[in-house]
Image (cartoon, rainbow, N blue to C red; front, side, top):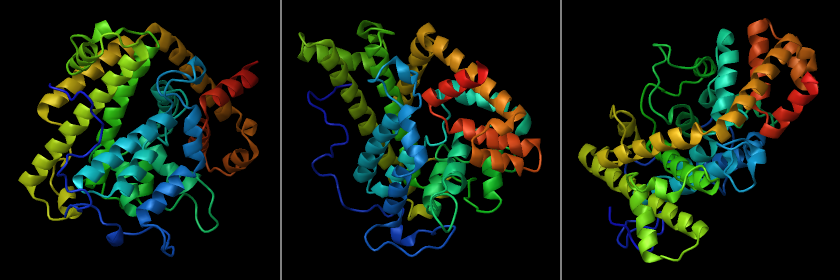
Length: 400
């Protein structure tokens, strides 16, 4: 693919209709509102208010010390769940602007999408899910919904953040429809849906779809960046990788004497640019073909409105496969994640058998729980909220 000599990710084409709202965009003045009625804020739209509540939440702050790939003590320059979420929100907001969608809603969903992650990334989630399998399991997307609707306890009138229906919808199903009747909904999600219908059987609005794809863009590119900086693989190992090899070759041709850190950044920014441009073009093509009249029509299409072209989807898969083989399964990474999984398993077993060792508020809640299943959910909630370093510290205190 030909690449610009000086690409700026998310910079609009000269004649792009910036400021023109697409007819199928989600409209803040037509929001379905909040579960608990509140007066509107005269200075912010409902979705701007959602974004602000997410940023000020305890769960969002904790993302600073939660693993993306490298456990926190590996170094200060690798991505964490917090920096990843910020990168996703920047990409999502820029793409929404290009497509005439509601930028604030796209940003809110992007910022919230990883709130439910456990310490230690996917290894921690897999360990907690396995430990909780007899008690309904654990799913980070469902847990994110639990956090923003129940576990964040900051406001006098309600539990949770009381976000709008549209933000909750995007959080619950940004990866696509969920067949509740077929048992696809995790227990925590099914429990919430029993009291608040988020219509999870359809695709979400376009802003949530964009947030999910912005996650893919950010994830692949910053993992390539972190993997190179960590020395898990070298630029020459990427020569035959679709899209990636071309980006590094372009930088080498333009700047033959460039130092390694600048070379990596220049290549990665070109990759992000190429993915953003493809996503914008393909989504515009699909919108022109489907001609949805409003956001309801987007949900009713029966297929996603936003997406990459088939060619770019194949290239993305090749990048994911490379990262799985050369980064996520690298001994330097798996040695740490194996240890992390053990920490999560041990903590769950200890707290479930001795809930009196939980902090006071959690201990009281466990004491009032009707059965072991409910206690297990409380223990799972507590562990999921831990940061990497706090989990390591608690494990050391409880096992020594």
